[in-house]
Amino acid sequence: MVEQGINIDKHLEWAISVLKKFIEIPTVNPPGERYGDFVSEASKVLEELGFSVETHEVPKSVVEKYYPEYADYPRYIVIGRLGGGRPTIQFNGHYDVVPPGAGWSTDPFKLTIKEGRLYGRGSVDMKGGIAASLLAIKAFTESFKEFEGTVEVALVPDEEIGGESGTGYLVRSGLSKPDYVVIAEPSGSDRVWFGHRGALWFYVEVYGKQAHGSAPWLGVNAFEGMVRVAEKFMREYSVKIGSKESKYSYDDPRGAKPTITVGGEVRGGAKINIVPGYYAFSVDRRLIVEESVEEVEKEVMEFIENIRREFPELKINVKVVNRLQPALTDPESELVKVLSESISEVLGVKPKLTVCLGGLDMRFYSEKGIQVVTYGPGPLSLAHQADEYLEIEEFTKVSKVYAHMLEKILVKR
Image (cartoon, rainbow, N blue to C red; front, side, top):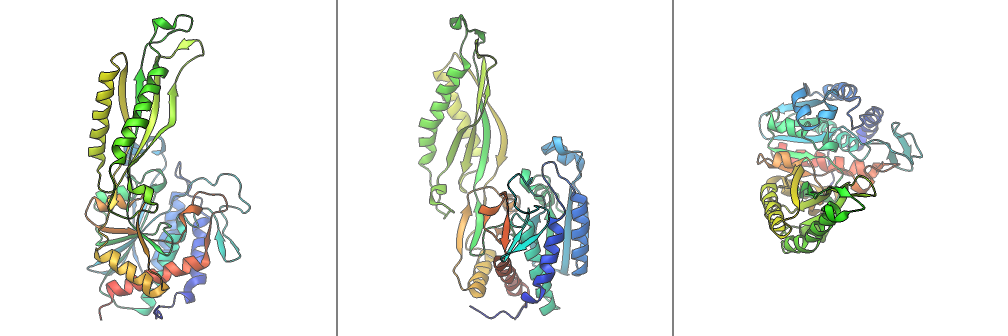
């Protein structure tokens, strides 16, 4: 473990005060509250650190396209830049948080410090990660007044509802074109996510013929049809996709195979004495990183077509409601290597390099061929829970790794 010349501890109190201000702004999503207040506060912090700052309002048309029910709530992206030229390394952080929910022993929107922990909604997911990156940058720039390249901070909304009007708009609109990206989501200080699984969410809709319950022979029971179709997915489709296996390491080895979750939602029926003419069930199909949403959607449609031929008395439709591409950065890439070395050199541990089981904003960078990883103070298991907290020690560890990584990338020897 190396002795780090960059003094993180000197600025720790400042970073906690920044996190305190961030948590006290309840940027609850849905629907997207107090975004303007957060952006104003974050811009001040970035300017005090010497960044040039841009604030971009996401066009209402973009929000309407993806999240029409929240279109009346403005969305903002903040980009701060320090230095100049290449390479550009960006820290990405989403500032929206999920609703607090019940069961808190502290005020979720007041930072509470207790027994070495920072309590508050967003402390882990992921205002803590944003503050950790700012702490690292403050300490780094104090030690190195001159460096080659650009440090960029991108603060985005809407990751909690899919990211299309946050990081998706940031990347696809060309507002930012970094060489390297670190998303400060809570992976944990000893783990780097170099990819994440994808997802295809859809409903299988089964139409029969409605009739009176006293004469069921006059109808075609959509519920019974749905059960038979659902069984096909559980018994045949799950076996079909279970033969695939990724060559990469995942957070849980079972995640290295595609999976389906059937029946998270079921819709249909009208009354106890009516033969139901419509029923639908949901399918959550998770992709390994070697798959694409397009090929999986084609696979599903072919499977459904075979079912249609088997049950000609039923009308069966597929309604896709979400497409989330998997993401992958080569584990041998420069960014993964430098970050891994930084973790080893600063913390004295060999990091776990894995694919995240859930979805992240990484996919928007990955589709543009930008090297991207997710690494931030965790663990993820504390996100979205009552009494969410971040260990101060974990916060400090990750900040030290960030700073060391900046030195390795931007300071030429």
